[in-house]
Length: 331
Length: 203
Image 1: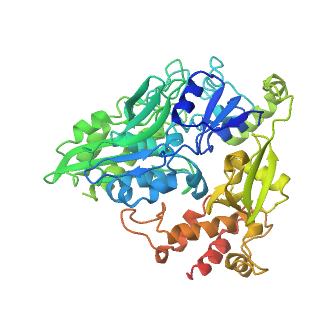
Image 2 (image 1 turned 60 degrees about the horizontal axis):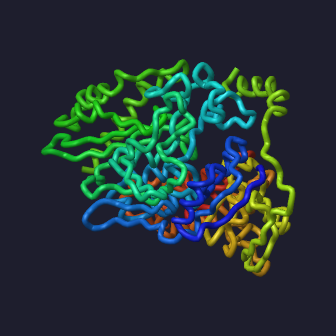
């Protein structure tokens, strides 16, 4: 790795102030993504600010009235093992348990997890192949290269990468918010608006600016999460990023679906909500597989597969169905 | 040609020129090292490291603890697994300077008073290795994994995460899933799983 300095901020305000005025400064917490990116020469921050000792940022708070608050420094393994998270929001626990390895889950934080960068092999390539995320303007090697693992929704000619976080998919399905603090104050960003589509600025994965620090993740009290499930399909059974994944959370109305929320991973530059399918699923019986399939298909008319990932269009619909049915079994 | 082969071919083709073009930031002109104090295998140690020194490099190069192995150096293989504050982590993916004041245990600190840890005994008993390069990481990972299971942590192999988990639920399928962060190039997986299973009383 290149030379850099490492220091600890006195408190959150000091961390934010330092970040706001220093374009060469990066926050580090779990470090599992940033250190890999530095080793792969994809980023060269001159100064790192170690956030790990900031107090009161590792909490997991599940109030009895509903909802969930998770501090940005909470570790993946602690959230996944938390009894209230498991019983009230199984989709969150499952998305974490199906990600990374036992060692990495003990290191990686919730805040870092949702901001991890794409696993596109061209972006990660230490030989510096053309990549608009790595070097804006250099071109996209995956657009006409090897793009089996890439997007089928929302991509641009400048970038066809997918977002790798499993947790972000679950939180998107739960209508969670990201609480962000900056020198100007605090704001809450709905998960659906936290990650960006690539457009012609794919170097920006998320909407945060310099001086922004993720403080916590919040699932609103109104969100019903008990009947939820995260289903992840991988090229190997364990310790792998998603080929395609789906997070589903549903409520019942009589014997039928009252509301369904579905988000997918491995298909776009951001967690991808199946909005049209969610509308079509209202009032459908969970026992009527054909009707469920037809409703899910409503979100795939806009799919635009690439040369090597045509299979994802059908696979993603099956994965969504499986997530929906398993969530339904928890009603 | 497979995807990997195609990529490797292009890589070799472009490597010579690209390496020359890669811009490295300037290297430091003065001593940029800082002191880090840790309790390593029960003993207080202070070492002088650069900010960029990983915990793995510090343990191996500064303290001479070569049990933790440097294999992929990217958090993919698990050979560098050590315990920090009692938890298994990958020492290649964290900076030594982030662990000031922490308690670190390597394979060298696992045995006590000359007695092998039960996992070490069972890895020998079950031939849980051939070349042995991954073994220290496997054993450190397994030791902490058993504690995680005792603490009731579920895994991706757990049938229903909404139900409580106990050590009695630690089946061989659970062991395989929980150990998936440790790769074995010799593919001794069946014997590794058998060794761990025996330690927790599963056959």
